[in-house]
Structures are given as C-alpha cells and as structure tokens.
Length: 396
Ligand code: GLY
Image 1 (tube, helix red, strand yellow):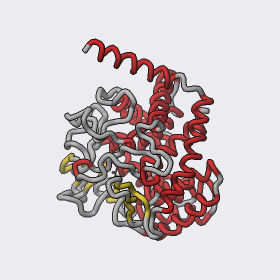
Image 2 (cartoon, helix red, strand yellow):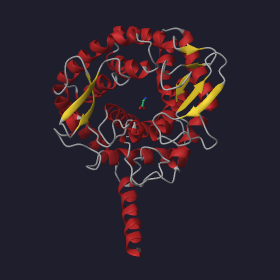
Image 3 (cartoon, helix red, strand yellow):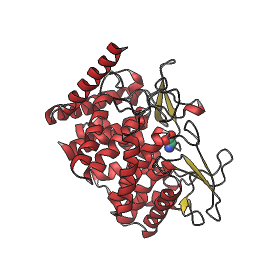
Image 4 (tube, helix red, strand yellow):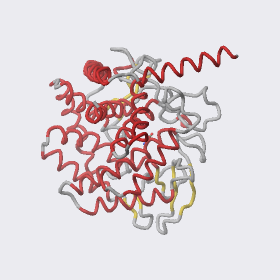
C-alpha cells in the first residue's frame, strides 16, 4: 500500500515536471506534427463517408464510421476541422473537401428547428470566412444568425433549445451558450444589432438560473415559455439533476470566456473565472486532466473519460489566459498545455489509419442515453485542433 502510494507520488511528480518542462520548441513541434498527422488522418475519414453525410463517430466493433445527416447539430465540425487543417498545411485536397462539405450544409442557413445553428454554421463558415475572407461565407453566417434569432422567446429572455424533448416545456441547455458567438459576431460584422442583444439577454438569463453556488452548471433549465418562470432544473445527458456533467461545464467555461471577448462585460469574465475554479479544483479531475464524463459519477474512477470535454476546456482555458495575469494565467495555460500533451499521447490519440480516421479516442456523447460511450467524436477533434491553433497563435 505504502509502495503503491509512493509510486503514485513519483509518477504524479514526474508527469507534472514533464509537462512543465515541455519547452516552447517541443510544443511547437507537437502542434506542427499534429496538424501534419491530421492532414493524413482526415484523408482516411474523407474516404469513409458517403457524399451526403457528415462523420460523427466510429464503431470499432463493426469497423464503421458513423455518419449523420446535415441537420444534426455536429454538421459544422468536420468542415471546420478541415479548414483549420488547411490553414496550417495548405493542402489543397483538404481545402477541396472543406469547400465541398460547406456546400453540403449551406442550406442549414434557414434551419430553425433547434438552437444548434451556431455550432453548425459558425464552426464551419466562421472558420472559412476567417481564413478566406470570401464575402459569400459572411452572407451565409449573417443569414444563419437571423434564423437562430427566431428561437428567442421574449418571455424567457432566452433562446429555446429544443421544441419537443422529453416532458420539457421551455428547455434551455447550457450547451446553448456556444451558439451565442455567431449572434454577436454577426451583429459586429454588418448584421442586425438585434442578434447581439438576444445573445446578451440569453447569457444573462443563463447566468442567473443555470448555476449553483459552487459555479457548477445544471444541464437543462425548463422555463414557462410565457412568464419565464423556472419550472425545473434537470439533466438530459449528465449523471443526475444535481451533478456536473463534464462537457456541460466545458460549454459554460467556453461560453462565458467567449462572451467576455466579444462584449468586454466584466461579469462574464468573473463568471468564467469562477467556472474555471470549479473545474480545476474539482477533486475528481484526474491527474492527467482529462475529465471523467461527469464530475459526480459515484463510480469514478471506473467510468469513461470524456476527451471532448478536455478539448473544449483546454481551448477555453487558453482564451481565459488571454484575459488574466500572473499565477492565475500561468495555471490556466499550464493545465491546458497538460491536457493537449496528454490528448496527444497514445492513451487518447489514434494511430494513422486507425480509429476510423478520427484523431482522438475516448469521448462520451450521452452515457445515460446509452449513446456514444468511450468513442471518437468529431467535436472532440474540432476543439482539440482549435486549442492547438490557439496555443500556437498566443503562447509560442
Ligand atoms: N450539445 C450536445 C452535447 O454536448 O452533447
């Protein structure tokens, strides 16, 4: 027992030193090599999907890439990942696939059936516009922001996440924070001022109702659509109504950090710092910083991890590092760096030609729904690539 404890201390200390000592040169190589790898790996993925569908995951038992229709909330992540790979490698085959898949999802710009249009259209067309400055992409983003804004319910002062789901009346999920970036961006880039007002109202309502005193987030708040009264505080994808579903904490951290970037409203920064505190000080956050799927699953450590939560949190922490100073900033960047190094290790990272062509393994989509447990997920790859790019742009 004593020996076991001692070896844990030695391994822990060693891995801390190893991460802290990874030099700028080594990080630069890690990031460069990852994009070169992704360029090759996504050519396997590219060949594994039918022309009218988007890659979502991989069923190892059947050796099959799982694909989804373009109206699925994840349809923007594959094109967005391709754009980020192209940006680093300048590979025209990757660019061609990025353009092909953008055309495929363009019709989503009038989609209003749920709240996910920001994920679908900003992760895709947002990156395409950022990289190419092609005005046609901007038009599509502005149209998409208009479509998403139709889901704002003045009585709730929030965007309705789902129309019909379980017994919910007016559900708003924490994930919805991520869709606000497109609304504010559109407004600041020639679009309607109203879309930013909607985003700000939504962020304020969410701040009021979605958080517990320790700054962990509920997954679903169910509202009365007319009065805005909170009917219940629930979960859909987490362990329990009172638990902290890992990806949800990631969406919250990313969402408020991004809202601070776009509005410079100090209360969003303060919210993001408090959420970061909850995540980083959580006793169940493992030594390698890749969260278990839910921070409160009582079966921890014998439960799946969620690499997608790590990728989202690392990308968000890198941005939070841009708005903070001293030891606090150093801690955010240090943890994000550790997450990226570990996600790049063989424990979480696929080998060339394996894992269906996805980069990362070990993400969890919806454990209580018995869906996508311990598998690759396209959005884990997307936020991993985004975090690597952020690290390169801001900290090398
Ligand atoms: N937005 C859905 C999820 O995070 O699974």
